[in-house]
Image 1 (cartoon, rainbow, N blue to C red):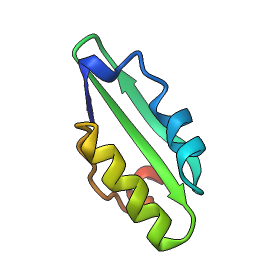
Image 2 (image 1 turned 45 degrees about the vertical axis):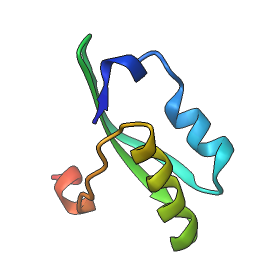
Image 3 (image 1 turned 90 degrees about the vertical axis):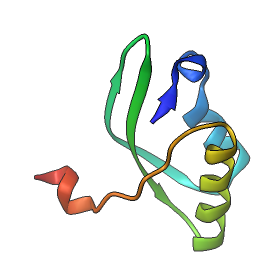
Image 4 (image 1 turned 180 degrees about the vertical axis):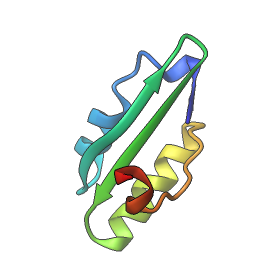
Length: 72
């Protein structure tokens, strides 16, 4: 989840440019107040961890989700 101030920012694009991760958008919901994105990240574990820390520094709430939950 990310706050309204970041909704217009190309966060996912920046994520792929800044870190060696592959992004796959699984679900998304955006309103004027909040953005909720279910994003699959693939890459080396350390690089994924670095990417998540960067997102959290931006004020984005990152929660792990099991892939089976998304597909059902």
